[in-house]
Length: 86
Image (tube, helix red, strand yellow):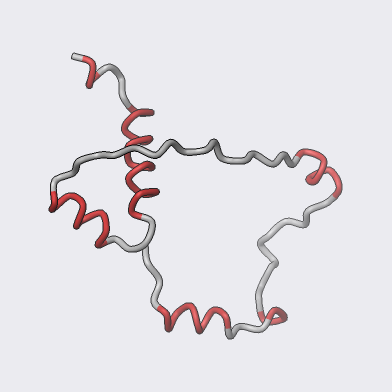
């Protein structure tokens, strides 16, 4: 999903005191005791050959096409129930 420059400008123009935080729970000490920082694993660079139209489609969705491609492959990997191993 992309967001227009105009919408970003509208959002950035909202004053902090005009933002409604009433549906967001307070973060107390107990919350911060449970928090853990998980750094992403480093990615491995690879060379991959793609059909020209597939690459164009990925790029047409905006910045981050390689990250998006990785997420798509991860989703397929995690949903694989042996379908690709036949």
